[in-house]
Length: 181
Image (cartoon, rainbow, N blue to C red; front, side):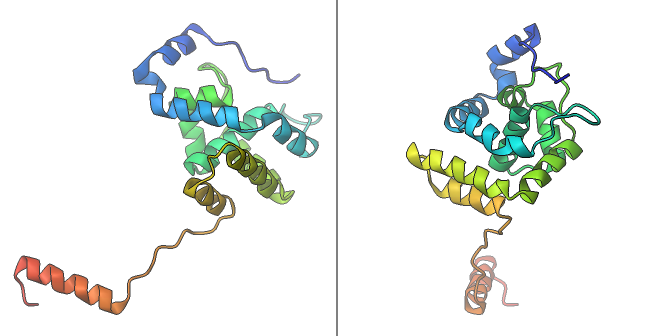
């Protein structure tokens, strides 16, 4: 038995047409993302590593977990925050394919999926596929570099000010406030 994504309920249809509940900018962004990402290619790439559910609890559908992973990447969400976002945002629920009454994966399930990708070095391949799509459609920009940094767990470093820059800043502050200390 597999978990099936249900048809939209009346509450889903109301949320979709209500600007207060939908989050128009987020919805538009996620719809664009939905068109860009090669879901079938990703399913083919990750499918051989994903559990078929022969033992234990039934796994969530693979595409649902991939979509949740992209939600984490794009919005830089931790596992617990991703679960919270799925509970709170109708736009995010629609993007991943959940209706309002569907059961949402918990943070541990999200963590295990992310670890599956990392363990099998699929996270880099997933991102490379995404980056190819962005480049092909002319969307590759500074945001792609930020996503690369997030994916590869590198910190985006700010330039550390020199001592002379710090002293100039302190002097300007003293001059502005009229203090000599």
